[in-house]
Structures are given as structure tokens and as C-alpha cells.
Length: 397
Image (tube, rainbow, N blue to C red; front, side):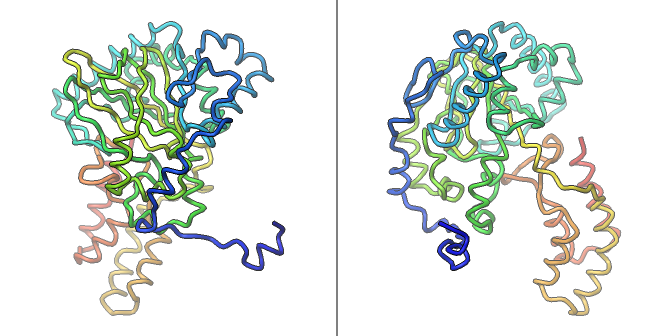
């Protein structure tokens, strides 16, 4: 198709609607193709998921040509193939895993003693143990352990395969105790953390773009037999274009529950997946296994604005002006929204999830939402300034 065809309207921007999602179409894209399992570097394919034994790939990362071929294969798997891969023995020496586990357990103990109950995105708050911002906490509490843990070329190679260079690593530790319940099936950050109504406001090309901004991963800090509830995965489900709306529907969740697969993992294995893959942490049905994983959320370098603005100060200056104009009916609701959108932060992330947790939803309140709530409830400027500064303090590292 040439540019003239595009100008003539042969291609038009689409907008997805939750009600238009088709379970039949979803099931159709889950069918494996021959090329999905025609992989050069994979040690084995288990339930459609390629497993790469890092011991057998020794030297693959130091040869530039072979490294590129391997990363190309990984990117193809994440994009077009199963959407998930396992790096077995990513930590050939699990000593750094054990060292980090001790630090994480100490952090969990300290946070429990302080009375903290971490909210969760897709499971009941407090059902298990979660460390928000484990990346920074590990680094500040035990920098030598942090250095040994992240001196791992396999983690970097996987991140670069999907995101390219200059990525940013964050992590959250999740511990599912014996009897711990499973999560609901979902997709992940970014659009996965929007409500259905919010996700419908984004055009189709943004739905396609969202998975390329993040790589999801998990490092196993304990052996994870299937009974302990390793992540439930639905291979190829990232192929379904409308999936950021579909995962919330009960018929799609029911389909997930009857078709997901689980792979046992050993301590030191790493799992990476496309954030658009339908997945959910499983239930721990064992009597003794404390299933711990370090959940890696690795972000593209490009999700950043060119300039840094003090939007809190901008909001403080604007609020009384906008409040007066609203009181005098000079602006319509749409015009008020347009002004707020040009000033305040519309996105709730990044934030400090210890102080600003996603309790009662997938994300905390954004600066724009706070601004609109203040106008709706007729806060005084002093009250607004006090509340927006509290919000900013909660969001700070």
C-alpha cells in the first residue's frame, strides 16, 4: 500500500470497544504456527514456551554476531511467538539470590513491624507479602549484594532484546505464602493499569505501542514446583489486539482459567514476557514453600518528556484562577478539562507505591484527578495547595 492509498482513507485509525471483543477471534490467535517452535537457540519447548538453558549458551553473549542472533530470536518470541520465554540457570551461581533473599526477608519483617500493608494491583491487599520499590531498597540497604545480584549479563541481554539500550529497571518482590490465593488474569503496565473506560479512550495504535514500552520479568528466589503457583500464562495471547479491554471480561477470564499453562521454575531461573500476555500469579497449594520472586519491570528509555516542569507549582498558581472562571461560568466543563490537561500531571505513575498505593483500584489518584475533585468539591485555594503538596510528598522517592 502506498502513501496515496493511505491519504485516500484505505487505512483509518481505529478505536477499540470492550463490547466488541470477540472470544472466537481471541481463540483463533492462540493457535501455534510452525515457526513458533522453529527456534535456533532454545533448549526445549514446553507447553509452547521456549526454554533457554544459559549453561548451554555459554559464550553467546560475548560474540557480537551470535548475541544479536539470540536477541533477535528472543524479540521474535516475545512479539510474534509465545510471548514468554524462560532463561534456565540465568544465575549459574545462586549465592547472590540467597543473599538478596535474606535482605528482602529483613525488609518484609521491618515493614510488617511498622504496620505497613502493601496494596496489590490484581490480588487482595495483604494476602501475601510484597515489597514495593525493591530495587532502591536493596541498593540502599545492601549495595554490595545489589552489585553481585545485578552483575548478570543475561538480564541485560533480555532487556536490550526488547527495549534496546538505556532502559530503566524497577522491581517489586512478591512472596506467596502457603495457601496464598491466585491473582486474576490480566495484562500489565501501561494500558493494563487503566480501567476499561480509560483504555477505550486510547486509539488502536496506542494499544499496539504499549507493550513495547515495558518488559516484564521475574527471577525465581525459590524452587517453584507447579503446586506452589508459578505464574499462569496463556501463550500467544499478546497477539490479540483488543486484549487490553478483553482481559477484564468474565468470558475471557474464564477462557484463561481453562487454558493457561504453568512451568515449574528452579531458583535462579528467570522468566520474561511481553506485558500484553494474559497472565496471573498462581495459588500456592503447598504446605511449606514460601514462593518468592523478584518481579522485574523494565522500562524503555523513551517514555520521558523533553523538559522537566514543576507542575505542582503550576497547579497552585492556576487553581484560584480556574475556580473563579468556573464560578462565573466563563468556561464549559470541556474547557476546564482542557486547561487542567495542559497543566497538571494526568498519569499516576511513577510514584512511591509504599506511600501512594493502588488501594481500591489499579492506580493512585493522578494530579489531574485531584485538581478536578478540588473544583467539584469547592475547596479553598489553601486546602487545594495543602492537598496537592501532600500528594507530591507521597509520590516522592
